[in-house]
Image (cartoon, rainbow, N blue to C red; front, side, top):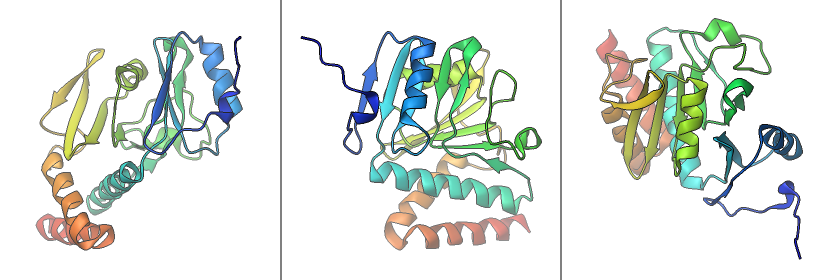
Length: 215
């Protein structure tokens, strides 16, 4: 006997995930519609495979600190940006979709000002996406298909910077969006300080130091 459970009734424990293979693009679209926008899980779709992730509290804390750190750098450098959080980015022509932990339009910030929905078949992709953890190739191949030029992946006390070279990601020692800063070193230091003195004080400490060296 086959038991069919509506996707919105599937419960995932915090920090867990499930993978659903052999889905069509229309089925992915139907699942997005069924789940709606107010939910605690994130989706990644690529190569007819859907991954549904329920972030852990540790995952959420790390992504908040990293995204706040990026905003501090941009503000101190007096650069404009648009942060779109876990927006659903999808591209029908590439049969791929992803919901990053956080993302930033920096070079292309003007292209998304005032837009409630982004369609990557028409709009440019974010300049930077941030993931607090990646556990399968589904997320990476989705990012590649969508053409997002830079992705930061944090996990297990390590940060990896991926930059798109052609159609594939390569690990990089520096961030193209922040070429003058040692991003990996900065993020790991701030996250470590956050465990000792708290996130807000660690970020304020970083901002004070950055302003001092920027003067």
